Structure formats: structure tokens, C-alpha cells
Image (cartoon, rainbow, N blue to C red; front, side, top):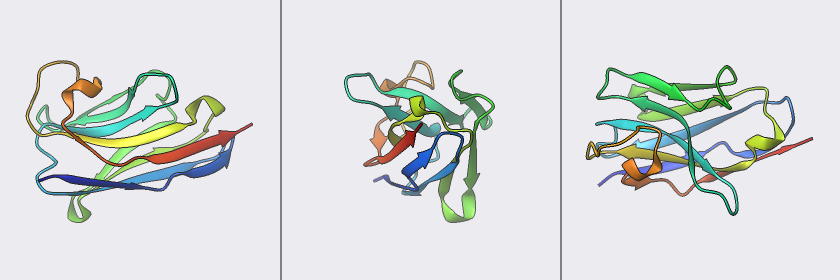
Length: 126
């Protein structure tokens, strides 16, 4: 049984930074782990993903490249998302997710993931 618990969200002014954390219990780090986000009325989208089965290659959405960085602390079973130069468009609920079944499809697609955290809200004000 995999459990994912996010933290670190909050409200910040544009240009600011936040670091999200996702503590995983169970065997979360099998295929892919990463962060997704969703705003009201929009589909959930991939933000940053680590393809563990693929050697730890990281993938980022074009909108966050150069601003967001994914990292992992294996000893703490924690996945981090460092978010810099935040923009109002980054406002969303952010979810941590893990693919433990190796489903087909893009690693950036939410459909691939079978384990989700409860989410943490990020609000960026202008």
C-alpha cells in the first residue's frame, strides 16, 4: 500500500519561491514519481516527473522548465519540487503521484499513475 503526503504549499507573490515535499510510504519508487497540478475547470497536468524505471530521467512541462526542479531524498523517502520565479499561472492544487504498475503511455500523463496524495494548494499573487 502506497501513501503519499504532500506539504509546502502556500501563498506567495509573483517572483517568489516555494518548495513542495512529498513523503512516500510503501513501494512508491518503482516506475515513475512526480508532481501534477490542477485548477478548477481544467484537466490535471504533469509538472515534473522522475522516470525511475528509465534511470531517473526527469521530465518537465515546458511552462516550468528552468524554474522548477525535482529532487529526491532516498533516506527520507521524500520527493521535492523546488519552485522558483513563480507566476500567477502557477496557481493550482499540486499533487504528488506514483506509478507502481508500469502502465503504458507518457510519464507526464496523469492516467499512468495509480497512487495520489491529497494535494497542496499553491497560490501566486501578482
